[in-house]
Length: 257
Image 1 (cartoon, one colour):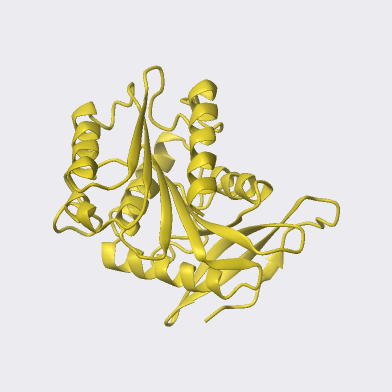
Image 2 (image 1 turned 90 degrees about the horizontal axis):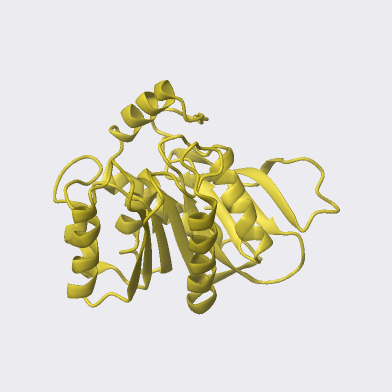
């Protein structure tokens, strides 16, 4: 079920995109989301943008807007809706502490359900090609999109510095890497070799699992980049690595969506 668009952003009559705050229905739960669309008539492929632990903040909204400028309908659902509606934060140490606490309250089955609701929302939009949906996620969202790459509707996945994939899953249980065999479509992974939070051995484990499962994939390792290198609002931003990664993301979506 699609909920009507609410709270359109500022007047965008002269913009190449339009953005709005929307709500996605998942049973009795209404999930806040940020929607960015090309501001023209057409049928477009869609991309789900998955947040870091900092919520659907300015960085995630800007990723959605960049995708809309490239001709995609992009939606960023709030994955902390059940425990902290309207949550977003910056990147200070106290923000990290709060975000990690909220992340620890998520559960894999609920996340998958929320992404399925986002997929249904996109399919119900008149300007979306219903069978052409991709996903992109960062940090916590990088882990999430590896998990939801198992959904048959997801035709391409890009994940950035998703930690814990070989050792954990949201809410506990078998680690997310155990679901690799169920991934349905190509997946690109992006890691910084100076990321102190994700051991390079974990990157190797993810690549090995994708290879063994015969999932079409590419794993990009950036030698001078750390965690969060794609985000220009963080001190760890590495513009050269970010630019290269974005080109690969666009190539992935162009080929598969």
